[in-house]
Image (cartoon, rainbow, N blue to C red):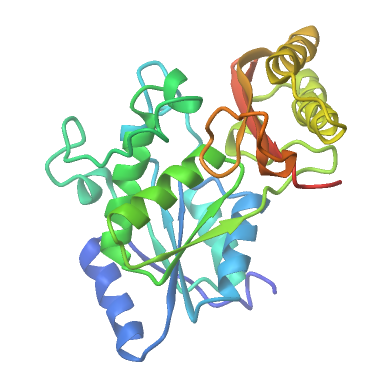
Length: 294
């Protein structure tokens, strides 16, 4: 569909306007899906929209760069903001509503010490260990967005796998009336998982970046072949990444259901290999579930 022929999205920036529009649909017994994003949309985001368009009568996409999930020294100020371009892409997809609130709209009492939502346990390791407070910021903003839109469905990608589990637990534990939809990772042809931060990579780094996914598959294939010496495999994976210039944040084999350290009694198809690694100034994130095959 061309942009010219597409239905223009209904762009709003306030809770009042978003709720009014959604209530109109719900009064007509139409189902609503929410696609929460920080904007700078790429094919991965588009795939989220297309997935829930098959499930819901109406789709809302939020665009909000959330300050509370960025730690000191992280890239909040530099994070790409491309609202007009994003709106054009969503218009071409036939999105029903774009919710692009200000910080004050989401955090009416300020973002320095807001009321927060925390998911203990699942939030503590991996990205939670290297980015203290990150997941509290994520759960807090997503809980607010869900309370504003009150959708029937909310979709999250599997690239941020720990985040997906954390948000799923939050929804279940708080009895929020929304179904969490999982969407698979979208990759470039060379295996690199799509991310808004990929634009930070230099041309040379972009050639190296797919090594992250290839390294994860090396470990997955070893597990599928019967290896259970998980610490040795993790060390091997980190060495492979370091050899091409990565600085691994973590590379670990965990249980897919709850990202706990595995026991030898578990079947391999219940495992997942997750990694976060710096390539220059860019932190890349990826995972491969052992149950998946090429």
